[in-house]
Image (cartoon, rainbow, N blue to C red; front, side, top):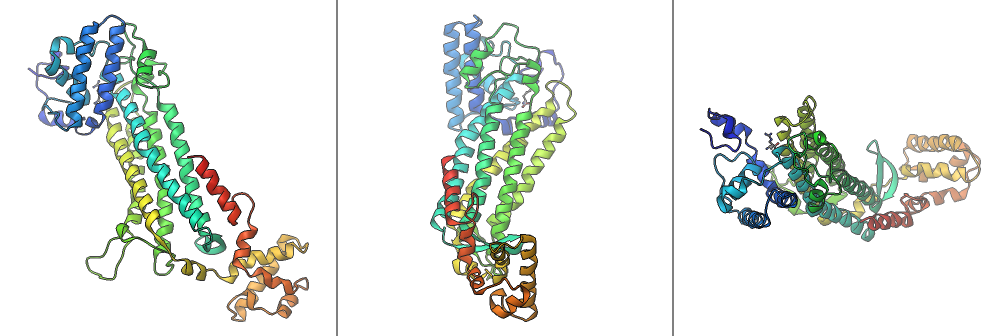
Length: 459
Ligand code: ARG
């Protein structure tokens, strides 16, 4: 007969392949701490309603501490029959304190409320211990560079065509803004999912009147999930975390794509540090931006995790079904990929070298055509008209083979529109163009500094 935890009603053995197919211990062992903490608080709850004596409770807690030490020190010995982290820990507790007492631990509890309690705690820990600090450092690096390199100008692009001059810091600040939104969004998600399913039982509720609020408080949840059917089967938080990961990786991917373009010889705006580049096995001259390409590529993988699990989830009847075990591999892959991507992005941005001259040399006079239109606006001409006039100037310069609109003579300008005067040439100044855009959010020095300060205040 079987030695499985649930083996009582079984006479036949599990097919060995079925055991492997069913087992989640190879990945859910990561939740061991959450599982042991959960059992500690749960057994305190059992003691509170008279289902365990103080003495039994004390023994259980000592046993749980020992198991934690074994996991911490990588000395926990897995048994071939262990199915998941929950059965492994309970089996081990029996070995340490005896089955008489250990056998009472699961009274009124099901792995259905247990596994999702663990998962919520585990995710909370990953956010607090890994993602929040890592994201904060990434944003801080962007802010710091933004402040230090405020004087560097570069071409801003739309449609990847030169558009208007901007500050390099303005570009840095744009991604710091995205990532700050990501950080805030992730904090909101945590508030939503930090609720306790524990005490819901298998699905129908707890038969001994356990104090679920007490369990929730002991595990630092900010409330209980108010319906036991939902408590055991709600995986919306898993989806939300993966959706968050997907959106975040989209931002990371676009950030990486910008830097890939800027690092080509054709642009030459930045030089990637050797620490984040690799060479070619054939072409000795190559220095490839592999770090950035992986940041871009891994966004696809994370989206795959999300879409795969959504497909698993969509047709599941109430309440717990084993399909839900698929939540963990997808989610863990997302969280690890995101964490590593943040660390790599932080390394890349804090070590790259900016090629200030290359950026400046890429600024061309036609990028001031809007400023030329604005010049006439200031003389009272409606913008739609000035846009057209400025366009004519661009076309004329181009037809005459001139290097830019600044090379047209005053006579030529006045032939196009009599309202042009000598002071129009003051327009052809990149610094001035940038400094004019000083309204909130713009690229003027004061406006960029304000953005960076505002972002810093949110950390
Ligand atoms: N390993 C399972 C999971 O992660 C635990 C829950 C199993 N519950 C059950 N009734 N078989 O989903």
